[in-house]
Length: 119
Ligand code: FES
Image (cartoon, rainbow, N blue to C red; front, top):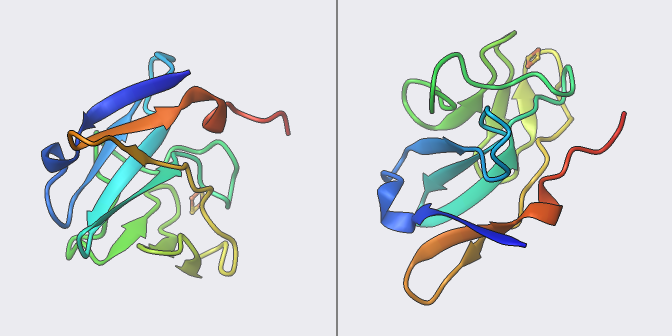
């Protein structure tokens, strides 16, 4: 089942926003907008799977907006690949979530792509 997140323009350039498309009560994924593209990741750090990344709502990026940062232990991730470049999980990656952009500019996800997998 597809779920609409928001209009793509409602994520500011160089910004990020968390979403709870399954209505679980917490943001389970987030979308980053950079270099004219939107990318989505599960809100789960590869250092300790399941750990949320942001210390407050939508705070997924470093101050300069050039990297994704996990607030738990400071791991930094590449905006485009999701690869951890510094911190306790160097070489591991965020889990991408396929984004669907509709003809009228909205961002959607398929709920099947964000289901938690048992560890
Ligand atoms: S849980 Fe993210 S850096 Fe440790």
